[in-house]
Length: 137
Image (cartoon, rainbow, N blue to C red; front, side):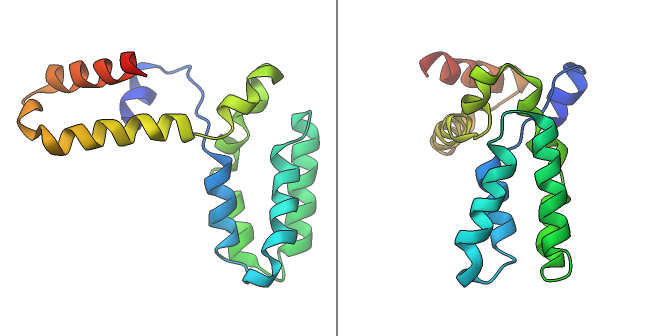
């Protein structure tokens, strides 16, 4: 689906979930340091301007590069897609930073797919089911 969106909607921006990125980064850090690092990661994603977010990223990288290089590399990976929300009006940020609503929709489609595997005969049948699920939400 991501490839289809990128190919059909060339100007669309992609926002990746910051909650999941935080969990991925914390996976490379010992549990005893999770709370401190979680607060620092939250500082990156909950500021009022992109410039401040970029500054916090630089501070995080400088602080942890030597101690947790894999965690820093994880943070750097697709970071731009995690900061896309800064391109939109601030009143929308809380809805697009975290993808739980979208994931709930996908889980419903996935659940239906398992029960109705014969319904996916062709592309149009897939689109019809997906559209019906979106309408229902």
